[in-house]
Amino acid sequence: MQRYEKLFINGEWVAPHGSGFTSVVNPATEEVFAEVANADLDDVNAAFAAARAAFPAWSATRAAERADWITKLHAALDKRRDALALAISQSMGCPLEIAKIIQVNCVSAFKKFAERAFEMEVEKQVNNSLVVREPVGVCAFITPWNYPLYQLIGKVAPALATGCTMVLKPSSVTPLQDLIFAEAVAEIGLPKGVFNLVTGRGGVLGDAMVTHPEADMVSFTGSTATGRRIQRLAADSVKRVCLELGGKSAFIITEDAPLEQAVSFGVKDVMINSGQTCIALSRMLVPASRYEEAAAIAKQVAEGLKVGDPMAADTYVGPMSSMGQRDTVLGYIQKGLDEGAKLLTGGLDYPEGISRGAYVRPTIFRDVHNKMTIAQEEIFGPVICMIPYHTLDEAISIANDSVYGLSGGVWAATREEGIRIARQLRTGGVYVNGGDFNYDAPLGGYKQSGNGREWGDFGMHEFYEIKSMQL
Ligand code: NAP
Image 1 (tube, rainbow, N blue to C red):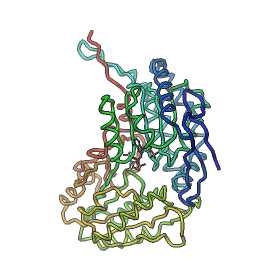
Image 2 (tube, protein in one colour):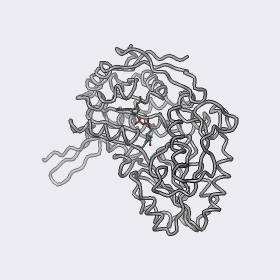
Image 3 (cartoon, helix red, strand yellow):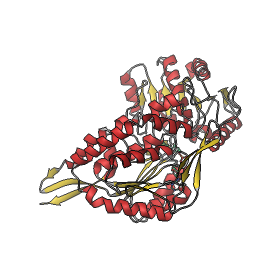
Image 4 (cartoon, rainbow, N blue to C red):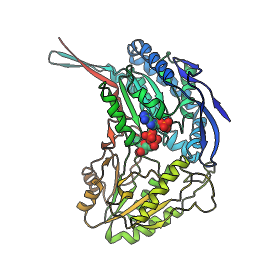
Protein backbone atom coordinates (compact mmCIF):
# COMPACT_ATOMS: atom_id res chain seq x y z
CA MET A 1 0.00 0.00 0.00
CA GLN A 2 1.40 3.40 -0.98
CA ARG A 3 0.66 6.07 1.61
CA TYR A 4 1.05 9.78 0.89
CA GLU A 5 0.83 11.60 4.20
CA LYS A 6 1.81 15.11 3.17
CA LEU A 7 0.75 18.05 1.06
CA PHE A 8 3.14 20.23 -0.92
CA ILE A 9 2.82 23.80 0.33
CA ASN A 10 5.32 26.66 0.19
CA GLY A 11 8.06 24.51 -1.29
CA GLU A 12 7.85 21.82 1.38
CA TRP A 13 6.13 18.56 2.14
CA VAL A 14 3.94 19.38 5.14
CA ALA A 15 1.65 17.34 7.34
CA PRO A 16 -1.94 18.37 6.65
CA HIS A 17 -4.08 20.17 9.16
CA GLY A 18 -6.93 18.04 7.84
CA SER A 19 -7.37 14.48 9.02
CA GLY A 20 -7.85 11.12 7.40
CA PHE A 21 -7.01 9.73 4.01
CA THR A 22 -8.74 9.19 0.70
CA SER A 23 -8.32 5.73 -0.79
CA VAL A 24 -7.11 5.34 -4.35
CA VAL A 25 -8.72 2.30 -5.95
CA ASN A 26 -7.44 0.27 -8.87
CA PRO A 27 -10.56 -0.01 -11.07
CA ALA A 28 -9.29 -3.19 -12.72
CA THR A 29 -9.22 -5.08 -9.41
CA GLU A 30 -11.44 -2.91 -7.19
CA GLU A 31 -8.62 -2.97 -4.62
CA VAL A 32 -7.31 0.03 -2.70
CA PHE A 33 -3.62 0.42 -3.54
CA ALA A 34 -2.83 3.89 -2.20
CA GLU A 35 -4.00 6.41 0.36
CA VAL A 36 -3.64 10.16 0.10
CA ALA A 37 -3.93 12.73 2.88
CA ASN A 38 -7.07 14.84 3.11
CA ALA A 39 -6.45 18.57 3.16
CA ASP A 40 -8.94 20.81 4.94
CA LEU A 41 -9.82 24.48 4.62
CA ASP A 42 -6.85 25.56 6.79
CA ASP A 43 -4.58 23.75 4.36
CA VAL A 44 -6.25 25.49 1.43
CA ASN A 45 -5.70 28.82 3.15
CA ALA A 46 -2.04 28.00 3.80
CA ALA A 47 -1.56 27.05 0.15
CA PHE A 48 -3.10 30.30 -1.12
CA ALA A 49 -1.13 32.35 1.39
CA ALA A 50 2.07 30.74 0.09
CA ALA A 51 1.07 31.36 -3.53
CA ARG A 52 0.22 35.01 -2.75
CA ALA A 53 3.49 35.56 -0.90
CA ALA A 54 5.47 34.07 -3.79
CA PHE A 55 3.71 36.10 -6.47
CA PRO A 56 5.59 39.44 -6.32
CA ALA A 57 9.03 37.88 -6.77
CA TRP A 58 7.99 35.18 -9.24
CA SER A 59 5.97 37.54 -11.41
CA ALA A 60 8.96 39.89 -11.57
CA THR A 61 11.37 37.23 -12.89
CA ARG A 62 12.67 37.57 -16.42
CA ALA A 63 11.27 35.21 -19.04
CA ALA A 64 14.71 33.61 -19.42
CA GLU A 65 14.71 32.64 -15.75
CA ARG A 66 11.24 31.08 -15.92
CA ALA A 67 12.25 29.29 -19.12
CA ASP A 68 15.21 27.80 -17.22
CA TRP A 69 12.94 26.55 -14.44
CA ILE A 70 10.54 25.01 -16.97
CA THR A 71 13.45 23.29 -18.72
CA LYS A 72 14.70 21.89 -15.40
CA LEU A 73 11.23 20.76 -14.39
CA HIS A 74 10.77 19.09 -17.75
CA ALA A 75 13.97 17.08 -17.20
CA ALA A 76 12.80 16.06 -13.72
CA LEU A 77 9.45 14.92 -15.15
CA ASP A 78 10.99 13.19 -18.12
CA LYS A 79 12.86 10.76 -15.89
CA ARG A 80 9.63 10.00 -14.04
CA ARG A 81 7.68 8.99 -17.15
CA ASP A 82 7.40 5.33 -16.15
CA ALA A 83 6.23 6.17 -12.63
CA LEU A 84 3.68 8.62 -14.05
CA ALA A 85 2.32 6.08 -16.53
CA LEU A 86 2.03 3.41 -13.84
CA ALA A 87 0.32 5.75 -11.37
CA ILE A 88 -2.22 6.83 -13.98
CA SER A 89 -2.84 3.33 -15.27
CA GLN A 90 -3.32 1.90 -11.78
CA SER A 91 -5.65 4.62 -10.62
CA MET A 92 -7.87 5.12 -13.67
CA GLY A 93 -7.41 2.01 -15.77
CA CYS A 94 -5.85 3.29 -19.00
CA PRO A 95 -3.77 0.39 -20.38
CA LEU A 96 -0.14 0.96 -19.35
CA GLU A 97 1.42 0.88 -22.82
CA ILE A 98 -1.24 3.24 -24.14
CA ALA A 99 -0.90 5.46 -21.06
CA LYS A 100 2.80 5.94 -21.86
CA ILE A 101 1.68 7.56 -25.10
CA ILE A 102 -1.69 9.25 -24.64
CA GLN A 103 -1.31 10.13 -20.96
CA VAL A 104 2.39 10.81 -20.54
CA ASN A 105 3.66 12.15 -23.88
CA CYS A 106 2.35 15.56 -22.87
CA VAL A 107 5.56 15.82 -20.82
CA SER A 108 7.32 16.62 -24.11
CA ALA A 109 4.83 19.38 -24.81
CA PHE A 110 5.55 20.86 -21.37
CA LYS A 111 9.03 21.96 -22.35
CA LYS A 112 7.70 24.15 -25.19
CA PHE A 113 6.37 26.52 -22.57
CA ALA A 114 9.98 27.51 -21.89
CA GLU A 115 9.98 29.27 -25.29
CA ARG A 116 6.50 30.62 -24.71
CA ALA A 117 7.65 32.42 -21.54
CA PHE A 118 9.29 34.99 -23.83
CA GLU A 119 5.88 35.93 -25.19
CA MET A 120 5.41 37.85 -21.92
CA GLU A 121 8.15 40.27 -22.92
CA VAL A 122 6.50 41.20 -26.21
CA GLU A 123 5.37 44.81 -25.94
CA LYS A 124 3.41 46.87 -28.40
CA GLN A 125 3.37 50.58 -29.04
CA VAL A 126 -0.14 51.71 -30.03
CA ASN A 127 -0.12 55.42 -30.89
CA ASN A 128 0.82 57.03 -27.56
CA SER A 129 0.28 53.83 -25.57
CA LEU A 130 2.69 51.14 -24.49
CA VAL A 131 0.80 47.83 -24.22
CA VAL A 132 2.37 45.13 -22.04
CA ARG A 133 1.45 41.74 -20.61
CA GLU A 134 1.44 40.91 -16.91
CA PRO A 135 0.64 37.60 -15.18
CA VAL A 136 -2.97 37.30 -14.01
CA GLY A 137 -1.88 36.41 -10.46
CA VAL A 138 -2.60 33.51 -8.13
CA CYS A 139 -4.41 30.66 -9.89
CA ALA A 140 -6.72 27.98 -8.49
CA PHE A 141 -6.60 24.78 -10.54
CA ILE A 142 -9.01 21.85 -10.31
CA THR A 143 -8.48 18.85 -12.60
CA PRO A 144 -10.40 15.62 -13.37
CA TRP A 145 -9.37 11.97 -13.65
CA ASN A 146 -9.52 11.07 -17.32
CA TYR A 147 -6.21 12.58 -18.55
CA PRO A 148 -4.94 13.77 -15.18
CA LEU A 149 -1.36 14.62 -16.15
CA TYR A 150 -2.35 16.27 -19.42
CA GLN A 151 -4.83 18.44 -17.58
CA LEU A 152 -2.29 19.34 -14.92
CA ILE A 153 0.35 20.34 -17.47
CA GLY A 154 -2.14 22.27 -19.61
CA LYS A 155 -2.67 24.60 -16.64
CA VAL A 156 0.62 24.56 -14.72
CA ALA A 157 2.92 25.03 -17.74
CA PRO A 158 1.42 28.30 -19.02
CA ALA A 159 1.03 29.55 -15.44
CA LEU A 160 4.76 29.05 -14.83
CA ALA A 161 5.61 30.57 -18.20
CA THR A 162 3.59 33.72 -17.59
CA GLY A 163 4.77 34.25 -14.02
CA CYS A 164 1.67 33.16 -12.12
CA THR A 165 1.68 31.21 -8.86
CA MET A 166 -0.82 28.47 -8.16
CA VAL A 167 -2.72 26.07 -5.93
CA LEU A 168 -3.71 22.78 -7.55
CA LYS A 169 -6.25 20.18 -6.48
CA PRO A 170 -6.40 16.95 -8.51
CA SER A 171 -9.40 14.66 -8.65
CA SER A 172 -9.46 12.44 -5.59
CA VAL A 173 -9.80 9.49 -7.99
CA THR A 174 -6.34 10.19 -9.48
CA PRO A 175 -4.10 12.23 -7.18
CA LEU A 176 -0.86 10.27 -7.66
CA GLN A 177 0.64 11.87 -10.78
CA ASP A 178 0.20 15.26 -9.11
CA LEU A 179 2.17 14.05 -6.11
CA ILE A 180 4.89 12.79 -8.48
CA PHE A 181 4.82 16.18 -10.20
CA ALA A 182 5.31 17.85 -6.81
CA GLU A 183 8.30 15.57 -6.16
CA ALA A 184 9.83 16.90 -9.37
CA VAL A 185 9.10 20.48 -8.28
CA ALA A 186 10.76 19.78 -4.92
CA GLU A 187 13.76 18.14 -6.58
CA ILE A 188 14.58 21.14 -8.77
CA GLY A 189 13.98 23.59 -5.92
CA LEU A 190 11.43 25.79 -7.70
CA PRO A 191 11.04 28.99 -5.63
CA LYS A 192 8.82 28.23 -2.67
CA GLY A 193 5.15 28.99 -2.95
CA VAL A 194 5.05 29.10 -6.76
CA PHE A 195 3.45 25.65 -6.98
CA ASN A 196 1.25 24.30 -4.17
CA LEU A 197 -0.65 21.03 -4.10
CA VAL A 198 -3.57 20.07 -1.88
CA THR A 199 -5.27 16.70 -2.06
CA GLY A 200 -8.78 15.85 -0.96
CA ARG A 201 -12.34 15.80 -2.19
CA GLY A 202 -13.71 18.41 -4.54
CA GLY A 203 -16.97 18.52 -2.61
CA VAL A 204 -15.03 19.56 0.51
CA LEU A 205 -12.30 21.83 -0.87
CA GLY A 206 -13.81 23.06 -4.14
CA ASP A 207 -15.92 25.98 -2.91
CA ALA A 208 -13.11 27.36 -0.77
CA MET A 209 -10.72 27.22 -3.71
CA VAL A 210 -12.93 28.89 -6.28
CA THR A 211 -14.12 31.65 -3.94
CA HIS A 212 -10.78 32.19 -2.26
CA PRO A 213 -9.99 35.89 -1.82
CA GLU A 214 -6.37 35.25 -2.78
CA ALA A 215 -7.29 33.52 -6.06
CA ASP A 216 -7.24 35.82 -9.09
CA MET A 217 -8.32 33.20 -11.59
CA VAL A 218 -9.82 29.73 -11.58
CA SER A 219 -9.12 27.13 -14.22
CA PHE A 220 -11.29 24.05 -14.03
CA THR A 221 -11.55 20.93 -16.16
CA GLY A 222 -14.38 18.56 -15.44
CA SER A 223 -18.09 18.13 -15.88
CA THR A 224 -20.35 20.89 -17.14
CA ALA A 225 -22.45 20.60 -13.96
CA THR A 226 -19.48 21.37 -11.70
CA GLY A 227 -18.22 24.03 -14.15
CA ARG A 228 -21.54 25.86 -13.98
CA ARG A 229 -21.41 25.88 -10.21
CA ILE A 230 -17.82 27.14 -10.19
CA GLN A 231 -18.63 29.96 -12.59
CA ARG A 232 -21.53 31.05 -10.38
CA LEU A 233 -19.43 30.94 -7.22
CA ALA A 234 -16.48 32.78 -8.74
CA ALA A 235 -18.76 35.50 -10.11
CA ASP A 236 -19.13 37.22 -6.74
CA SER A 237 -15.49 38.28 -6.76
CA VAL A 238 -15.37 38.62 -10.59
CA LYS A 239 -12.50 36.18 -10.96
CA ARG A 240 -11.36 35.14 -14.38
CA VAL A 241 -12.74 31.66 -14.96
CA CYS A 242 -11.46 29.24 -17.57
CA LEU A 243 -13.61 26.15 -18.05
CA GLU A 244 -12.84 22.99 -20.02
CA LEU A 245 -16.01 20.94 -19.77
CA GLY A 246 -17.88 18.12 -21.42
CA GLY A 247 -18.53 17.25 -25.05
CA LYS A 248 -20.73 15.18 -27.32
CA SER A 249 -18.77 15.40 -30.50
CA ALA A 250 -20.08 14.37 -33.90
CA PHE A 251 -18.05 12.66 -36.61
CA ILE A 252 -19.46 13.21 -40.11
CA ILE A 253 -18.46 10.58 -42.64
CA THR A 254 -19.36 11.75 -46.15
CA GLU A 255 -20.88 9.64 -48.92
CA ASP A 256 -17.62 9.40 -50.85
CA ALA A 257 -15.24 8.98 -47.87
CA PRO A 258 -13.04 5.87 -47.63
CA LEU A 259 -15.52 4.07 -45.37
CA GLU A 260 -13.34 1.35 -43.90
CA GLN A 261 -10.64 3.82 -42.88
CA ALA A 262 -13.09 6.41 -41.56
CA VAL A 263 -15.24 4.03 -39.50
CA SER A 264 -12.20 2.25 -38.09
CA PHE A 265 -10.70 5.61 -37.04
CA GLY A 266 -14.01 6.65 -35.45
CA VAL A 267 -14.42 3.46 -33.42
CA LYS A 268 -10.85 3.43 -32.12
CA ASP A 269 -11.07 7.15 -31.32
CA VAL A 270 -13.97 6.55 -28.94
CA MET A 271 -12.82 3.27 -27.43
CA ILE A 272 -9.35 4.48 -26.44
CA ASN A 273 -9.19 5.40 -22.72
CA SER A 274 -12.52 3.51 -22.43
CA GLY A 275 -14.38 6.42 -23.97
CA GLN A 276 -13.35 8.79 -21.18
CA THR A 277 -12.04 11.44 -23.52
CA CYS A 278 -13.76 14.80 -23.56
CA ILE A 279 -13.13 15.19 -27.32
CA ALA A 280 -14.26 11.62 -28.17
CA LEU A 281 -16.24 11.49 -31.43
CA SER A 282 -19.13 9.70 -29.78
CA ARG A 283 -21.81 10.41 -32.43
CA MET A 284 -20.95 8.79 -35.76
CA LEU A 285 -22.98 10.36 -38.57
CA VAL A 286 -23.15 8.05 -41.58
CA PRO A 287 -24.93 8.52 -44.94
CA ALA A 288 -28.09 6.38 -44.96
CA SER A 289 -26.98 4.89 -48.29
CA ARG A 290 -23.86 3.40 -46.65
CA TYR A 291 -25.29 2.75 -43.19
CA GLU A 292 -25.37 -1.06 -43.33
CA GLU A 293 -21.86 -1.22 -44.73
CA ALA A 294 -20.59 1.18 -42.04
CA ALA A 295 -22.38 -0.74 -39.28
CA ALA A 296 -20.72 -3.99 -40.35
CA ILE A 297 -17.27 -2.36 -40.30
CA ALA A 298 -17.90 -0.70 -36.93
CA LYS A 299 -19.01 -3.97 -35.34
CA GLN A 300 -15.99 -5.82 -36.65
CA VAL A 301 -13.53 -3.14 -35.49
CA ALA A 302 -15.09 -2.86 -32.01
CA GLU A 303 -15.16 -6.62 -31.51
CA GLY A 304 -11.52 -6.85 -32.54
CA LEU A 305 -10.33 -4.56 -29.74
CA LYS A 306 -8.79 -6.41 -26.83
CA VAL A 307 -10.55 -5.61 -23.55
CA GLY A 308 -8.94 -6.51 -20.24
CA ASP A 309 -6.01 -6.13 -17.88
CA PRO A 310 -4.45 -2.66 -18.21
CA MET A 311 -1.04 -4.20 -17.48
CA ALA A 312 -1.20 -6.51 -20.54
CA ALA A 313 0.69 -5.12 -23.52
CA ASP A 314 -2.02 -5.95 -26.06
CA THR A 315 -4.99 -4.44 -24.17
CA TYR A 316 -6.72 -1.59 -25.99
CA VAL A 317 -9.72 -1.08 -23.67
CA GLY A 318 -9.16 -1.17 -19.90
CA PRO A 319 -11.79 -0.67 -17.19
CA MET A 320 -13.65 2.57 -16.57
CA SER A 321 -11.91 4.84 -14.08
CA SER A 322 -14.14 3.73 -11.22
CA MET A 323 -17.08 1.49 -10.36
CA GLY A 324 -19.19 4.65 -10.08
CA GLN A 325 -18.34 5.60 -13.64
CA ARG A 326 -19.16 2.05 -14.74
CA ASP A 327 -22.61 2.42 -13.17
CA THR A 328 -23.12 5.73 -14.95
CA VAL A 329 -22.20 4.26 -18.33
CA LEU A 330 -24.35 1.15 -17.83
CA GLY A 331 -27.21 3.47 -16.89
CA TYR A 332 -26.86 5.20 -20.26
CA ILE A 333 -26.71 1.88 -22.13
CA GLN A 334 -29.95 0.86 -20.42
CA LYS A 335 -31.44 4.24 -21.31
CA GLY A 336 -30.47 3.76 -24.97
CA LEU A 337 -32.21 0.38 -25.00
CA ASP A 338 -35.28 1.87 -23.31
CA GLU A 339 -35.41 4.64 -25.91
CA GLY A 340 -35.38 2.14 -28.77
CA ALA A 341 -31.80 2.24 -30.01
CA LYS A 342 -30.48 -1.16 -31.17
CA LEU A 343 -27.28 -2.74 -29.94
CA LEU A 344 -24.87 -3.44 -32.76
CA THR A 345 -22.32 -4.78 -30.31
CA GLY A 346 -21.58 -4.58 -26.58
CA GLY A 347 -24.19 -4.00 -23.92
CA LEU A 348 -24.75 -4.39 -20.20
CA ASP A 349 -22.84 -7.60 -19.50
CA TYR A 350 -19.23 -7.82 -18.43
CA PRO A 351 -16.84 -8.41 -21.34
CA GLU A 352 -16.16 -12.09 -21.98
CA GLY A 353 -13.86 -13.68 -19.39
CA ILE A 354 -14.18 -10.77 -16.93
CA SER A 355 -16.25 -10.90 -13.76
CA ARG A 356 -15.04 -7.98 -11.65
CA GLY A 357 -13.62 -4.51 -12.05
CA ALA A 358 -15.07 -1.41 -13.69
CA TYR A 359 -15.19 -2.94 -17.18
CA VAL A 360 -17.78 -2.06 -19.80
CA ARG A 361 -17.97 -3.78 -23.18
CA PRO A 362 -17.20 -1.57 -26.19
CA THR A 363 -20.73 -0.73 -27.21
CA ILE A 364 -22.20 0.60 -30.43
CA PHE A 365 -25.81 1.62 -30.79
CA ARG A 366 -27.39 1.74 -34.23
CA ASP A 367 -30.65 3.38 -35.31
CA VAL A 368 -30.00 6.26 -32.96
CA HIS A 369 -31.97 9.48 -33.33
CA ASN A 370 -30.19 12.64 -32.29
CA LYS A 371 -32.95 13.56 -29.85
CA MET A 372 -32.34 10.42 -27.78
CA THR A 373 -30.67 10.94 -24.41
CA ILE A 374 -27.69 8.83 -25.48
CA ALA A 375 -27.11 11.22 -28.41
CA GLN A 376 -27.51 14.38 -26.34
CA GLU A 377 -25.79 13.66 -23.03
CA GLU A 378 -22.14 12.94 -22.50
CA ILE A 379 -21.81 9.25 -21.58
CA PHE A 380 -18.05 9.31 -21.01
CA GLY A 381 -17.71 5.62 -21.73
CA PRO A 382 -16.94 3.25 -24.63
CA VAL A 383 -20.27 3.90 -26.34
CA ILE A 384 -20.87 5.09 -29.91
CA CYS A 385 -24.18 6.28 -31.35
CA MET A 386 -24.46 5.62 -35.10
CA ILE A 387 -26.87 8.13 -36.62
CA PRO A 388 -27.97 7.98 -40.28
CA TYR A 389 -28.35 11.14 -42.40
CA HIS A 390 -29.61 11.89 -45.93
CA THR A 391 -27.93 15.14 -46.96
CA LEU A 392 -24.75 16.85 -45.87
CA ASP A 393 -26.74 19.85 -44.65
CA GLU A 394 -28.75 17.51 -42.46
CA ALA A 395 -25.52 15.98 -41.10
CA ILE A 396 -24.12 19.40 -40.23
CA SER A 397 -27.36 20.37 -38.56
CA ILE A 398 -27.39 17.14 -36.51
CA ALA A 399 -23.75 17.70 -35.54
CA ASN A 400 -24.56 21.22 -34.32
CA ASP A 401 -27.73 20.12 -32.53
CA SER A 402 -25.99 19.78 -29.17
CA VAL A 403 -25.54 21.93 -26.09
CA TYR A 404 -21.86 21.06 -26.36
CA GLY A 405 -19.28 22.39 -28.78
CA LEU A 406 -15.95 20.90 -27.82
CA SER A 407 -14.80 18.85 -30.77
CA GLY A 408 -15.91 17.19 -33.96
CA GLY A 409 -14.69 15.12 -36.86
CA VAL A 410 -15.15 14.92 -40.60
CA TRP A 411 -13.94 12.37 -43.08
CA ALA A 412 -14.52 13.50 -46.66
CA ALA A 413 -13.09 12.49 -50.03
CA THR A 414 -10.68 15.43 -50.03
CA ARG A 415 -9.05 17.59 -47.41
CA GLU A 416 -10.61 20.71 -48.96
CA GLU A 417 -14.10 19.28 -48.64
CA GLY A 418 -13.29 18.21 -45.08
CA ILE A 419 -12.18 21.73 -44.17
CA ARG A 420 -15.29 23.20 -45.84
CA ILE A 421 -17.50 21.03 -43.60
CA ALA A 422 -15.31 21.58 -40.52
CA ARG A 423 -15.80 25.35 -40.80
CA GLN A 424 -19.55 24.81 -40.39
CA LEU A 425 -19.25 22.95 -37.08
CA ARG A 426 -19.75 25.08 -33.96
CA THR A 427 -16.93 23.45 -32.02
CA GLY A 428 -13.53 24.42 -30.68
CA GLY A 429 -11.75 21.72 -32.70
CA VAL A 430 -12.35 19.40 -35.65
CA TYR A 431 -10.41 16.32 -36.76
CA VAL A 432 -10.34 16.27 -40.57
CA ASN A 433 -9.72 13.01 -42.47
CA GLY A 434 -8.08 11.35 -39.47
CA GLY A 435 -5.79 14.24 -38.51
CA ASP A 436 -3.53 13.57 -35.51
CA PHE A 437 -3.96 15.07 -32.07
CA ASN A 438 -1.67 18.10 -31.73
CA TYR A 439 -0.37 19.23 -28.33
CA ASP A 440 0.52 22.64 -29.73
CA ALA A 441 -3.01 23.35 -30.96
CA PRO A 442 -5.42 25.20 -28.66
CA LEU A 443 -8.05 23.03 -26.99
CA GLY A 444 -11.34 24.29 -25.65
CA GLY A 445 -15.03 24.51 -26.30
CA TYR A 446 -17.86 26.54 -27.74
CA LYS A 447 -21.27 26.62 -26.05
CA GLN A 448 -21.60 24.59 -22.82
CA SER A 449 -18.23 22.91 -23.38
CA GLY A 450 -16.64 25.86 -21.63
CA ASN A 451 -14.64 28.94 -22.34
CA GLY A 452 -10.99 29.72 -22.77
CA ARG A 453 -8.34 27.65 -24.49
CA GLU A 454 -5.54 25.48 -23.16
CA TRP A 455 -2.27 24.38 -24.79
CA GLY A 456 -0.17 25.95 -27.47
CA ASP A 457 0.46 29.65 -27.85
CA PHE A 458 -3.25 30.40 -27.38
CA GLY A 459 -3.16 28.56 -24.05
CA MET A 460 -1.06 31.40 -22.63
CA HIS A 461 -3.83 33.97 -23.04
CA GLU A 462 -5.84 32.91 -19.99
CA PHE A 463 -2.86 33.59 -17.78
CA TYR A 464 -2.03 37.19 -18.50
CA GLU A 465 -3.55 40.62 -18.14
CA ILE A 466 -3.00 43.37 -20.69
CA LYS A 467 -1.89 46.78 -19.42
CA SER A 468 -1.82 49.94 -21.51
CA MET A 469 0.32 52.88 -20.44
CA GLN A 470 -0.57 56.19 -22.10
CA LEU A 471 2.64 58.10 -22.70
P1 NAP B 1 -16.22 16.50 -11.97
O1 NAP B 1 -17.03 15.67 -11.09
O2 NAP B 1 -16.73 17.80 -12.39
O3 NAP B 1 -14.79 16.60 -11.26
C1 NAP B 1 -13.71 17.33 -11.80
C2 NAP B 1 -12.92 17.93 -10.67
O4 NAP B 1 -13.76 18.77 -9.92
C3 NAP B 1 -12.36 16.92 -9.68
O5 NAP B 1 -11.11 17.38 -9.20
C4 NAP B 1 -13.38 16.95 -8.57
O6 NAP B 1 -12.83 16.55 -7.32
C5 NAP B 1 -13.69 18.42 -8.55
N1 NAP B 1 -14.95 18.75 -7.91
C6 NAP B 1 -16.00 17.95 -7.59
N2 NAP B 1 -16.96 18.67 -6.98
C7 NAP B 1 -16.52 19.95 -6.93
C8 NAP B 1 -17.06 21.16 -6.43
N3 NAP B 1 -18.26 21.22 -5.86
N4 NAP B 1 -16.33 22.29 -6.55
C9 NAP B 1 -15.13 22.27 -7.13
N5 NAP B 1 -14.55 21.15 -7.60
C10 NAP B 1 -15.25 20.01 -7.52
O7 NAP B 1 -15.87 15.80 -13.34
P2 NAP B 1 -15.36 14.37 -13.53
O8 NAP B 1 -16.55 13.50 -13.58
O9 NAP B 1 -14.28 14.07 -12.56
O10 NAP B 1 -14.66 14.52 -14.96
C11 NAP B 1 -15.21 14.12 -16.14
C12 NAP B 1 -15.75 15.31 -16.89
O11 NAP B 1 -14.70 16.19 -17.26
C13 NAP B 1 -16.40 14.92 -18.18
O12 NAP B 1 -17.64 15.56 -18.27
C14 NAP B 1 -15.45 15.44 -19.25
O13 NAP B 1 -15.99 15.77 -20.48
C15 NAP B 1 -14.86 16.60 -18.60
N6 NAP B 1 -13.56 16.85 -19.20
C16 NAP B 1 -13.39 17.92 -20.01
C17 NAP B 1 -12.16 18.16 -20.60
C18 NAP B 1 -11.93 19.34 -21.48
O14 NAP B 1 -10.80 19.67 -21.74
N7 NAP B 1 -12.94 20.00 -21.96
C19 NAP B 1 -11.10 17.33 -20.35
C20 NAP B 1 -11.32 16.24 -19.52
C21 NAP B 1 -12.56 16.03 -18.92
P3 NAP B 1 -13.10 15.06 -6.76
O15 NAP B 1 -12.65 14.12 -7.84
O16 NAP B 1 -12.25 15.00 -5.55
O17 NAP B 1 -14.57 14.97 -6.50
